[in-house]
Image: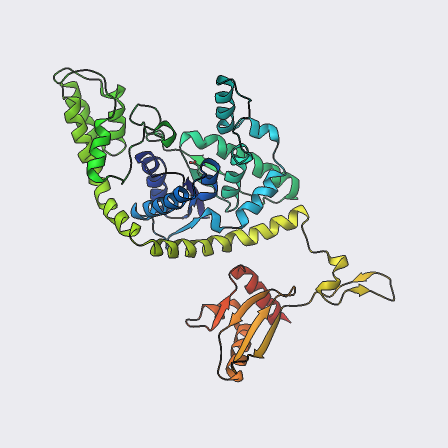
Length: 442
Ligand code: TRP
């Protein structure tokens, strides 16, 4: 069985070394393992929780998407998308919200940090807390459960959220699964060595602590300058230093191999000065980042390329999300009203038995001619929504031939190069395939 790996990065700032080491690099490495199917995304709905500056949101989405790609994500191999392009996610968020205990959310670290800060400041416990912040873990659970991810590579600070996603998935399965596993229960995946990259001051590297080293911004020079600000002890050159107590060394370790790590430790013990050590750390990091920075600059200069990749990813992601969401709606009772389906087609009351009857209308192909004199067809669902729309044909016969072909070959005919048919943007391939299958069976 293939294993699904999924992770996202909130788009509320400029990517830093911690994002790369803690999330991007391990996720890309996992995506290259055989038997792994990966879903990576930019968590822009999450960004709205922390940021009400549209320009910053816009900029950050672009930077983070470009970072994923520059770091080696292969969009052919990975389903790479923007959270906000997947309309199924907010809908699933609601379904989960309705089965999540408020008490569970009260225990969320992010929420507790806010109420603790308010208590310290003598404010009302919930001052400045939005419902978005409060139910942040539910949106995150929807991200994960929507794609039935098995493994979620995250930093240690996110582990609680994965556990909450498991709780919600489990509860939903129990309430509505009727013995089936509607959701896979996800597992957090932490790389013990690099789970917590320290920042300039030794605390976890984070934009909220203002201790981050930017990944690409500022170039090699910016990297050197940031490293110069890493706090070290006051031992002088020539004095032996304890490498393992130094977070400069922890940053180095995240990039170095075993031999390089041993060498730096030995040299510090022998009295290497902190200035020289920083120089060595900078060179080592630059060796990895230099080539990526070039790709990054290139992508940033071509946002249209990034946009096209993300839209294609959204299409792939929704082909997975839409069928599952349909199943979930069905499971909770959001179903077609078979007994009162007059609008759907030939519903009525049987004169003989008095029972409500229903014949659900099948989807239908409509061929027609426009004022331009050319010929067209469309495929409409039972409820009237247009599923497929053809291009213009000069001859009615050509349009008829394509209709026949779609009926005979089903959705496969859509994949034919140059097929003169477009699927409506809000309709999944799945639904079209189902409609065509109904017609083929009729
Ligand atoms: N909350 C995560 C963070 O801030 C980002 C995120 C959103 C995420 N949805 C996710 C990570 C789903 C993993 C899986 O780092």
